[in-house]
Structures are given as C-alpha cells and as structure tokens.
Image 1 (cartoon, each protein chain N blue to C red):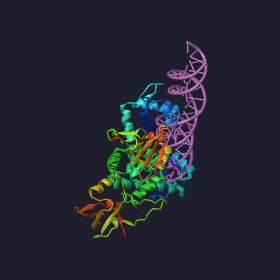
Image 2 (image 1 turned 90 degrees about the vertical axis):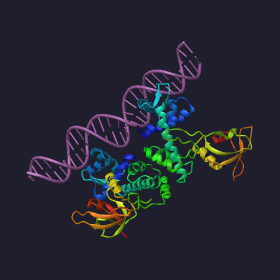
Image 3 (image 1 turned 60 degrees about the vertical axis):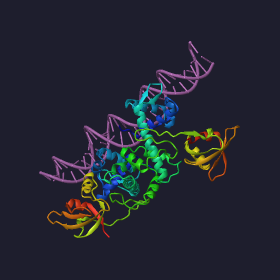
Image 4 (image 1 turned 45 degrees about the vertical axis):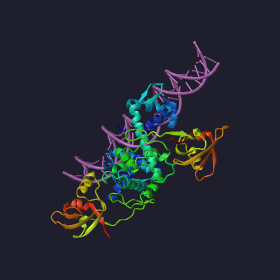
Length: 219
Length: 219
DNA sequence: TTTATTTTTTAGGTTTGTCTAAATTTTAAT
DNA sequence: ATTAAAATTTAGACAAACCTAAAAAATAAA
C-alpha cells in the first residue's frame, strides 16, 4: 500500500508519541505536527478507514500492527538518510533532520535496500537511534543515561534523548557527539550536576537535565 | 523562491519541450505530463503570475530567464541524483529515472551542493546528459551521432538521444552504454543501418534509427 | 471565404488536506 | 451532583491540483 506525504507524517508522529504514552491524544498529535486538532480528527478517520489504527471517538488512538509496520519503515528510511547525510555528505549531525524529513517520503523500496547496502547496514543513525531492518526489527542497544553512571567510569556516548536543535547545539559546545568517549568524574548531590571529562578537552560540568539526556553503552 | 512538486514538474517539462520547439503548446505539454489540456491552462496562469514564463492566450508559451534558471536547477538536481544512484548505489542506468524524479524535488540547496561535491562534480549523468553547474551553466560536450561517423573509426559513446525504456533495453542487448568503446565498421546505403563492433562482443548491425540516437565524443 | 476541425480556454465540479467556529463529550472543580 | 473548563468532534469553507463538458479561438479544408 502507498501513502501520501501527509499520511506518512501522521503515522510517524503517532508512532513517536506512542513510545512515551500508551495511547495518543488529539491535542498532543496536533501539537507535534504543528497543526490544528480538527485537522487531526479528519486524518484519524482516514487512517482508521485504511485500517492503520485503533480509534474510538474522544478516547484517543494508537497504531495497530499494520500501522506500526508502516511507521517502522518510515523511521527506517529517515534514519538511513540521516546516516547517509552525515557519513557520506559530511553534514553536521544537528543539521540533517529537516532534509531527512523530505527524503524519507521517496517511496522506492529498492532505493532503500540499496542505500542500506551502500551504508553497510548501519545499526544506528547519527543521533544514536536504532535503525529498523527491512522487517521492522529494531536492534536493541543496551544503554544508560550519564545521570546513572557511577563515578570514575569511562563510557562511550550511544545516543541523546532530547534532539531539539537547542540541545544539539549545547552538546556541540561540550564537544559531545555519538561515539564520544567521556569520563564521569563526580556527581554533585546538590543539584545532580555531573563533572565530566571529554577526551582532549577540559573538564566541565553538565546539568542533571543534560546528563539525563546523554545515553552511553552499557555492556 | 520555493515551488510545489507540481509546479516543478511543469517547469521541467516546459524546459525539455523548449529544447525541440521554440514555443510550447498546451497539448504537447499535457501529453508530456500525462494530464489534461485544461489542467495545463490552469497551471500556466499560475506560473505566469509567478513571472516564470511568457504566455499569450492561444499563442503558446515559453520560460523566461527566471523560469529557465529554475528549470536548470531542477535538471541539475535530477541528473546529480541519477549519477548517485548509478555510481554509488549500483542501479542500472535504465532504472534510475523514476526515482530521480522524486528525489529532485527535495529542496535543500546545501544538500545538492554537498552531493555534487561527494560525486566529485560530475559533468554528465548516466545517460550522458550534461549536468548544469550551480549557476545553471551547462558544460558543452562535443558529440556526433553514430549515423554520421566515418567507417573504420573507433569512438566512445557519450550519450543517447532517445531515453525511453524500450531504447535503453535495446542498448543493453547490444552491450552499449555511456563510455562504451565501439568501432563503426561500415554503413549500408540501402537502409542506413550500420555495422558496429563493441569491444569484447560480436559484430552486429544497428538500424539507422538506433544509430542516430547514439552519440559519441567528437574531439 | 465560409465551413469544418483542431486547439485552447472557461466554467463548474472533485479530492486532499487544511482551517475556523460552533457543538459535543469528557474531565476537573466547586 | 452540578457547574466550569478543557479536549474533541462536527459543520462548513478554502486552496491546490486535478477533472469533464461546453464555449471560444485558431487553423485547415472545401
């Protein structure tokens, strides 16, 4: 089955909101998509008709198995393109989201299969988020937030929780990216902030809020 | 300025039709775009309003300087993506058109600039068609059709005139692609057909129609 | 030079995805 | 348990891009 750009954007957003809350509300989706609740209701009817979601009036909604599969293939396309943009074209990792947002809607499955092969079947995108495989299976990567790492331990950054431009900009200042090796020196109990040392850079202190959003490999 | 996918498709098609006839007609454009004349008239009004073309009711139309510049940037994007699909992803050259048709509408100029750099500033796409540079300048590649090559001469294929799937399929059978070296053995005056020899393949005869559509470097 | 044919345009309608404003339902507060 | 507030849906409109059918203009034929 084939979907319009708009439908795909709705499906993807519902998928992402579902990660946090079991069932998604009209308002939250409207907010996520920067549109109006009335528009959301319209589209929901359509997606329900296409049998992509469970939806009861006034009661919220969530993707069904089919909808989830579609969502995963969109997420897959998005993250493969992000990987491509960073590793092949040399984009900064905080600049690729908008472009991948457009590229993800190009619908050739053969294209994505060949792109995946060209990139050598990467497991994660430049933000450390896992890339679903052809069957929608998401590689599980064990990770913990820096806020939970014991002092004196050296770890490697695997992903970041909040991917807002503001956050990404801040991380750049701290010289932190996916794959960055850092040492957790000590945690301040007063406000939960953490002193860290990034390889080849001066020791610095990050707020608890930031620490909670930096995930590292846990093996 | 930014254009919709539909607008871009119209602009590109007008550009291509202009290469053959000085002024484009409503019917020919409708035919090219697989749409109805009435739809073409609608869009023409819009493009005229946006000052992209000269248009007089019932008298045909053509892109003005601005329209041409826009067209060239679309053609540039299309051909760069085709190059990418063939040289990086390993697509057959006769399979890339439809996909490039979608990719060309992704509008980031930084993306195209970086793609161009990644591909090492190619001069032509996989069909041998020249790729306009950032300023819309088209590299001039001197070429002649095989129908005009003198007998016994060895030449290198630079492009093909007719790029229909039928033609591309036929060329594959003859083992002819861009960059192929071939020797023109002799021309038959009866029907204008030409005997050629492709490196590492048996001698064969191509019709005059085919010969006229195979272009080779002329230096 | 009329008449016929073809081409192009206009008029009015459809679909997709959006909107505002009003109505309805649910949830929270008194 | 009412009432107030918030969330959601419906109703009706709008723009983009398309369509069909009819009208108008240009071209070709008699």
